[in-house]
Amino acid sequence: MKIRKRTVGGLLLLGILSCSCSTPPEPYPPMQMGLGVAQNMSPVGELSKNLPVRQTFAAPHDGLCGIALFMATYARPNPSNLTIRIMQAEGEKTLKTFQIDSSKLINNSWLLLPIDSVPGSKEKAFWVDIQGDGEPGNSPTVWMNPQATFAESRGKLFINAKESPGSLCFQLYFALKPSEKKTQQQPART
Image 1 (cartoon, rainbow, N blue to C red):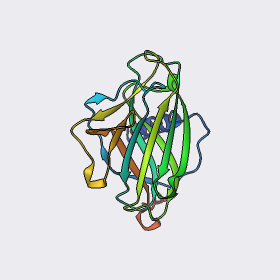
Image 2 (cartoon, rainbow, N blue to C red):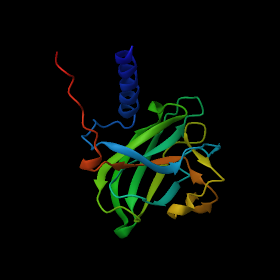
Image 3 (cartoon, rainbow, N blue to C red):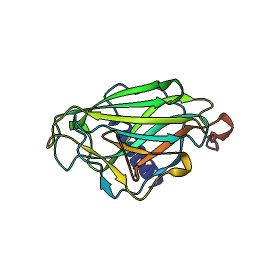
Image 4 (cartoon, one colour):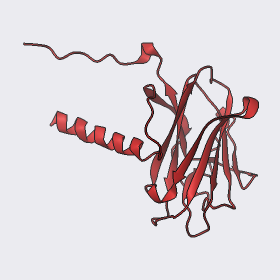
């Protein structure tokens, strides 16, 4: 029974990670979840070509290595694409750009966007830009919480280049330091 539960859990995680982007998976360090806004309350609107979205934040830990966004499809196929950029404010450096086929998104699910670990990311400013190329009626959305500001991390939400109250529903991930990695114990031999 324990093996079955681990297998199902592993398959669920593998499914989530494999749906996160259209490029082959790259090796990334073990991650731990950090701060973010997980309670969704409303969509930001259709991520069409006329509705760019930006979420700013300051990383609360070193080793930023991924961001997850809570996406929705309006329970329909969306023949459009999203361009998602993760940026470091210092020097306006692009850490990674993702091209997402919106028709492959799963309604009301997390989209994990892994990046190479950023050493010294603690208290540094970052942002995520989301831009669609579709028309209204053919575009997905991302969930937000208009009551959460993520202010403790200098986070601000911009919809169509205008500051909006609230925050996107997102989670930040950080690379585990070698001392934090759990060591796997070898099964006892009899």
